[in-house]
Image (cartoon, rainbow, N blue to C red; front, side):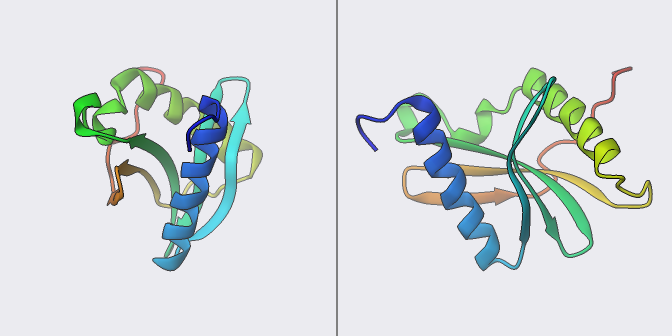
Length: 123
């Protein structure tokens, strides 16, 4: 994916992750969901769970592992964006919510379910 800017490269990996998740039985509801607080790469359904997916990619291990790039600050931002999504989409309070990471290291894709817990404003 040489010669592309970061956004184009990120979008290509997000499409790859979406295809991977569809093959695993997920329904992708939104790609690149954005609001004033930030962005969530993918929003989908896995069985009865509403899942917010963060897609991270590393070409080589020298840059560290992809999953390690989902910092506490990034987790807080994802949770804040998910709050707005749930409000705007009228998601039932009874809906099970999950925060997963799709880590792409080279050619290997790892789906890390429940990668982190919800972090609310008071945390």
